[in-house]
Length: 316
Image 1 (tube, rainbow, N blue to C red):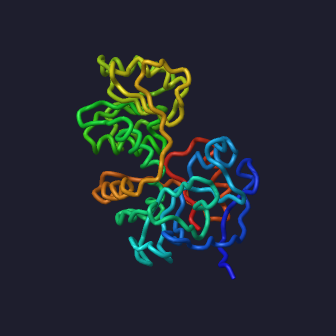
Image 2 (cartoon, rainbow, N blue to C red):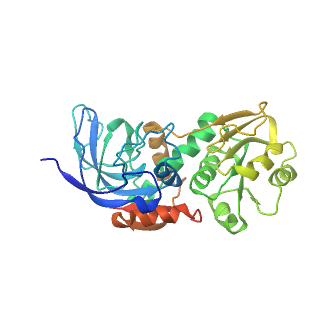
Image 3 (cartoon, one colour):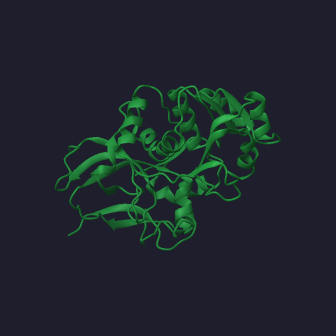
């Protein structure tokens, strides 16, 4: 008989009220896969977007669907050819698959071993679970797409959010000058993370404020906010500078701008690098609240309000 696990899941598109917490079957292990006992699963705004059906045109969902893409846990079993990790090893992963169904808001997840990296030793499971999606998004946006180099200047829009705050820390590690844009109340937080300059998007023209600081403009704009903030900031982009957005797909943008839209992909080699940076003290994760699996719907509702600082984590 198939083993059972407790899981939060939904059977139709909608909001957090659609979440049920019941027993589901643990998927059977296939070649190259690992069974991970979930110790912590971070909640991200994209979880609600997927659940609402907004991304289903390019991210198919199969019901019943378990939300959650971030996980930190312990290897409990391994299938044929999955030998990079031993049973008992502590791991973490960005667990998004081509079809959304087996997420991380559950007691267990079966995942290809190729998605896994060793968990940072210096972080708790809750903190480690807060890295994969936001860390890889910032890493791939600034380093892969943006080619950010030491000595360059990066403008981060939405810099106090989960992705932005990892962006500040990674850009500072790289040796870049960082300008963070967020509301005034979050400026001390951004400065604590290493932002060299902070700009309030309320009542300020972001682009003009940046030009006052750097008349020649910035090398890279990393957009995790979009909207008016992005439009205002465009005048601050150097000729030959790069714009990378995780929200805007090129709408309302001048075709002459060197632009790239980025949707984060799993990358275990980059997770290993993020682990090294965390263990070397370059990355900190602030966990603001933890919820039990029974409270998964509440956790998703909380993040839907968009007023969170730090990570919200579900602990099965």
